[in-house]
Image (cartoon, rainbow, N blue to C red; front, side):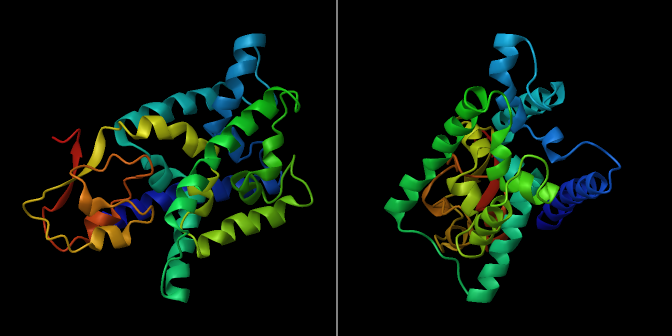
Length: 258
Protein backbone atom coordinates (compact mmCIF):
# COMPACT_ATOMS: atom_id res chain seq x y z
CA UNK A 1 0.00 0.00 0.00
CA UNK A 2 2.86 2.37 0.80
CA UNK A 3 4.36 1.70 -2.65
CA UNK A 4 1.04 2.37 -4.36
CA UNK A 5 0.60 5.68 -2.54
CA UNK A 6 4.15 6.72 -3.41
CA UNK A 7 3.49 5.99 -7.09
CA UNK A 8 0.31 8.08 -7.02
CA UNK A 9 2.14 10.90 -5.25
CA UNK A 10 4.93 10.83 -7.84
CA UNK A 11 2.43 11.03 -10.69
CA UNK A 12 0.81 14.20 -9.37
CA UNK A 13 4.07 15.75 -8.20
CA UNK A 14 5.66 15.01 -11.57
CA UNK A 15 2.67 16.56 -13.32
CA UNK A 16 2.87 19.84 -11.42
CA UNK A 17 6.65 20.02 -11.91
CA UNK A 18 6.21 19.44 -15.64
CA UNK A 19 3.59 22.20 -15.70
CA UNK A 20 5.99 24.52 -13.86
CA UNK A 21 8.77 23.83 -16.36
CA UNK A 22 6.43 24.39 -19.30
CA UNK A 23 5.32 27.68 -17.77
CA UNK A 24 8.86 28.87 -17.15
CA UNK A 25 9.82 28.09 -20.74
CA UNK A 26 6.76 29.86 -22.12
CA UNK A 27 5.23 26.66 -23.50
CA UNK A 28 1.94 27.28 -21.64
CA UNK A 29 0.28 30.21 -19.87
CA UNK A 30 -1.21 27.84 -17.31
CA UNK A 31 0.17 27.45 -13.80
CA UNK A 32 -0.62 25.15 -10.90
CA UNK A 33 -3.46 27.46 -9.86
CA UNK A 34 -5.27 26.48 -13.06
CA UNK A 35 -5.81 23.07 -11.48
CA UNK A 36 -6.14 24.14 -7.84
CA UNK A 37 -9.50 23.31 -6.23
CA UNK A 38 -9.15 26.18 -3.76
CA UNK A 39 -9.67 28.49 -6.72
CA UNK A 40 -13.22 27.16 -6.80
CA UNK A 41 -13.78 28.56 -3.31
CA UNK A 42 -12.41 31.96 -4.34
CA UNK A 43 -14.70 31.96 -7.38
CA UNK A 44 -17.97 31.33 -5.54
CA UNK A 45 -18.86 34.87 -4.38
CA UNK A 46 -18.05 36.85 -7.57
CA UNK A 47 -19.63 34.10 -9.66
CA UNK A 48 -22.84 34.23 -7.64
CA UNK A 49 -22.98 38.05 -7.42
CA UNK A 50 -21.55 39.21 -10.75
CA UNK A 51 -21.97 36.07 -12.89
CA UNK A 52 -18.29 36.17 -13.76
CA UNK A 53 -14.99 34.58 -12.81
CA UNK A 54 -12.28 36.68 -11.22
CA UNK A 55 -8.68 36.81 -12.30
CA UNK A 56 -7.65 33.54 -14.03
CA UNK A 57 -10.23 31.32 -12.38
CA UNK A 58 -12.44 29.18 -14.61
CA UNK A 59 -15.12 26.50 -14.54
CA UNK A 60 -12.32 23.98 -14.05
CA UNK A 61 -11.52 25.35 -10.59
CA UNK A 62 -15.14 25.09 -9.54
CA UNK A 63 -15.41 21.57 -10.95
CA UNK A 64 -12.29 20.54 -9.08
CA UNK A 65 -13.65 22.01 -5.86
CA UNK A 66 -16.91 20.09 -6.26
CA UNK A 67 -14.92 16.93 -7.00
CA UNK A 68 -12.84 17.50 -3.87
CA UNK A 69 -15.98 17.84 -1.77
CA UNK A 70 -17.26 14.51 -3.11
CA UNK A 71 -13.85 12.89 -2.57
CA UNK A 72 -13.70 14.14 1.02
CA UNK A 73 -17.17 12.85 1.80
CA UNK A 74 -16.15 9.48 0.40
CA UNK A 75 -12.55 9.16 1.62
CA UNK A 76 -11.92 11.86 4.26
CA UNK A 77 -8.82 13.98 3.49
CA UNK A 78 -7.15 11.39 1.26
CA UNK A 79 -6.48 14.19 -1.21
CA UNK A 80 -3.87 15.59 1.15
CA UNK A 81 -1.75 12.44 1.43
CA UNK A 82 -2.34 10.91 -2.00
CA UNK A 83 -2.76 13.80 -4.45
CA UNK A 84 -1.58 17.19 -3.16
CA UNK A 85 1.96 17.85 -4.48
CA UNK A 86 2.77 20.19 -1.60
CA UNK A 87 1.57 17.58 0.87
CA UNK A 88 3.95 15.11 -0.76
CA UNK A 89 6.91 17.50 -0.43
CA UNK A 90 6.07 18.19 3.22
CA UNK A 91 5.73 14.49 3.97
CA UNK A 92 9.13 13.75 2.48
CA UNK A 93 10.66 16.63 4.42
CA UNK A 94 9.14 15.23 7.59
CA UNK A 95 10.75 11.86 6.89
CA UNK A 96 14.06 13.56 6.22
CA UNK A 97 13.75 15.47 9.48
CA UNK A 98 13.13 12.25 11.41
CA UNK A 99 16.28 10.74 9.94
CA UNK A 100 18.36 13.85 10.58
CA UNK A 101 17.20 14.53 14.13
CA UNK A 102 16.17 11.01 15.09
CA UNK A 103 12.69 12.16 16.10
CA UNK A 104 9.71 14.33 15.23
CA UNK A 105 9.15 17.58 17.08
CA UNK A 106 5.66 18.36 18.33
CA UNK A 107 4.26 21.47 19.92
CA UNK A 108 2.64 21.19 23.36
CA UNK A 109 -0.87 19.75 23.14
CA UNK A 110 -2.65 22.96 24.17
CA UNK A 111 -0.66 25.12 21.75
CA UNK A 112 -1.18 22.56 19.00
CA UNK A 113 -4.96 22.60 19.42
CA UNK A 114 -5.12 26.39 19.40
CA UNK A 115 -2.82 26.74 16.42
CA UNK A 116 -4.87 24.29 14.36
CA UNK A 117 -7.64 26.88 14.39
CA UNK A 118 -5.40 29.27 12.45
CA UNK A 119 -6.43 27.40 9.31
CA UNK A 120 -9.89 28.87 9.62
CA UNK A 121 -8.49 32.36 10.11
CA UNK A 122 -6.34 31.97 7.00
CA UNK A 123 -9.35 30.65 5.06
CA UNK A 124 -11.53 33.58 6.10
CA UNK A 125 -8.75 36.09 5.39
CA UNK A 126 -7.91 34.64 1.97
CA UNK A 127 -11.53 34.64 0.81
CA UNK A 128 -12.50 37.90 2.51
CA UNK A 129 -9.56 39.86 1.12
CA UNK A 130 -10.03 38.37 -2.35
CA UNK A 131 -13.66 39.44 -2.42
CA UNK A 132 -13.05 42.92 -0.93
CA UNK A 133 -9.70 44.71 -0.67
CA UNK A 134 -8.00 42.71 -3.40
CA UNK A 135 -10.94 43.39 -5.72
CA UNK A 136 -11.14 39.86 -7.04
CA UNK A 137 -7.41 39.54 -7.61
CA UNK A 138 -5.78 36.43 -6.15
CA UNK A 139 -3.58 38.34 -3.72
CA UNK A 140 -3.15 35.17 -1.67
CA UNK A 141 -0.59 34.04 -4.26
CA UNK A 142 2.11 36.04 -2.49
CA UNK A 143 1.61 34.01 0.70
CA UNK A 144 0.78 30.58 -0.72
CA UNK A 145 3.75 28.16 -0.59
CA UNK A 146 2.04 25.86 -3.10
CA UNK A 147 1.81 28.59 -5.72
CA UNK A 148 5.21 30.09 -4.89
CA UNK A 149 7.03 26.75 -5.04
CA UNK A 150 5.40 25.37 -8.16
CA UNK A 151 5.56 28.57 -10.20
CA UNK A 152 9.06 29.39 -8.94
CA UNK A 153 7.89 32.79 -7.71
CA UNK A 154 5.42 33.44 -10.52
CA UNK A 155 3.00 36.27 -11.28
CA UNK A 156 1.52 37.89 -8.20
CA UNK A 157 4.30 36.99 -5.80
CA UNK A 158 6.42 39.54 -3.98
CA UNK A 159 10.06 39.89 -2.97
CA UNK A 160 9.37 38.25 0.39
CA UNK A 161 7.34 35.37 -1.07
CA UNK A 162 10.22 32.97 -1.71
CA UNK A 163 11.63 33.50 1.78
CA UNK A 164 8.20 32.97 3.31
CA UNK A 165 7.78 29.74 1.35
CA UNK A 166 11.20 28.51 2.46
CA UNK A 167 10.28 29.11 6.11
CA UNK A 168 6.84 27.49 5.85
CA UNK A 169 8.04 24.49 3.87
CA UNK A 170 11.27 24.12 5.84
CA UNK A 171 9.30 24.05 9.09
CA UNK A 172 8.12 20.57 8.09
CA UNK A 173 11.63 19.31 8.86
CA UNK A 174 10.87 19.93 12.52
CA UNK A 175 7.08 19.90 12.92
CA UNK A 176 5.26 17.36 10.72
CA UNK A 177 3.10 19.01 8.06
CA UNK A 178 3.45 22.45 9.64
CA UNK A 179 1.66 24.24 6.79
CA UNK A 180 -1.07 21.61 6.42
CA UNK A 181 -1.73 21.34 10.13
CA UNK A 182 -1.84 25.00 11.08
CA UNK A 183 -2.30 27.21 8.03
CA UNK A 184 -3.71 25.47 4.93
CA UNK A 185 -7.05 27.07 3.96
CA UNK A 186 -7.95 24.19 1.66
CA UNK A 187 -7.52 21.78 4.54
CA UNK A 188 -9.83 23.99 6.60
CA UNK A 189 -12.58 23.68 4.00
CA UNK A 190 -12.34 19.89 4.15
CA UNK A 191 -12.37 19.58 7.95
CA UNK A 192 -16.16 19.48 8.53
CA UNK A 193 -16.68 16.92 5.78
CA UNK A 194 -13.66 14.84 6.75
CA UNK A 195 -15.13 14.06 10.17
CA UNK A 196 -17.93 12.13 8.43
CA UNK A 197 -15.93 10.70 5.53
CA UNK A 198 -16.90 7.14 4.65
CA UNK A 199 -13.51 5.51 4.11
CA UNK A 200 -11.81 5.31 7.49
CA UNK A 201 -9.49 3.22 9.63
CA UNK A 202 -11.20 0.73 11.95
CA UNK A 203 -9.47 -0.87 14.93
CA UNK A 204 -10.29 -4.44 15.91
CA UNK A 205 -10.00 -4.32 19.70
CA UNK A 206 -9.96 -8.11 19.89
CA UNK A 207 -6.77 -8.28 17.83
CA UNK A 208 -5.07 -5.04 18.90
CA UNK A 209 -2.36 -5.47 21.54
CA UNK A 210 -2.20 -1.75 22.43
CA UNK A 211 1.47 -1.61 21.44
CA UNK A 212 1.08 2.03 20.34
CA UNK A 213 2.95 1.61 17.04
CA UNK A 214 0.08 3.29 15.19
CA UNK A 215 0.11 6.30 17.51
CA UNK A 216 3.86 6.67 17.12
CA UNK A 217 3.85 6.62 13.31
CA UNK A 218 0.80 8.85 12.77
CA UNK A 219 2.08 12.22 11.48
CA UNK A 220 -1.07 13.96 12.71
CA UNK A 221 -0.84 12.72 16.31
CA UNK A 222 -4.13 10.85 16.14
CA UNK A 223 -4.53 8.36 19.04
CA UNK A 224 -5.43 5.49 16.74
CA UNK A 225 -4.98 2.87 19.48
CA UNK A 226 -7.62 4.53 21.64
CA UNK A 227 -10.56 4.63 19.21
CA UNK A 228 -12.78 2.11 17.46
CA UNK A 229 -12.77 4.15 14.26
CA UNK A 230 -10.59 7.06 13.17
CA UNK A 231 -12.99 9.94 12.57
CA UNK A 232 -10.51 12.72 13.38
CA UNK A 233 -10.69 15.68 11.01
CA UNK A 234 -6.95 15.54 10.33
CA UNK A 235 -6.84 11.91 9.20
CA UNK A 236 -5.65 11.77 5.59
CA UNK A 237 -5.87 8.00 5.17
CA UNK A 238 -2.15 7.81 4.52
CA UNK A 239 -2.41 4.27 5.97
CA UNK A 240 0.97 4.51 7.70
CA UNK A 241 -0.66 3.16 10.86
CA UNK A 242 -1.97 0.12 8.97
CA UNK A 243 1.44 -0.54 7.41
CA UNK A 244 3.27 -0.25 10.74
CA UNK A 245 0.80 -2.29 12.77
CA UNK A 246 2.48 -5.59 13.78
CA UNK A 247 -0.82 -7.44 14.26
CA UNK A 248 -2.58 -8.48 11.06
CA UNK A 249 -6.23 -7.44 11.09
CA UNK A 250 -5.90 -5.06 14.03
CA UNK A 251 -6.24 -2.04 11.74
CA UNK A 252 -8.07 -2.08 8.44
CA UNK A 253 -9.89 0.21 6.05
CA UNK A 254 -13.65 0.25 6.32
CA UNK A 255 -16.58 2.21 4.96
CA UNK A 256 -18.59 3.59 7.84
CA UNK A 257 -17.45 0.68 9.99
CA UNK A 258 -18.42 -2.06 7.55
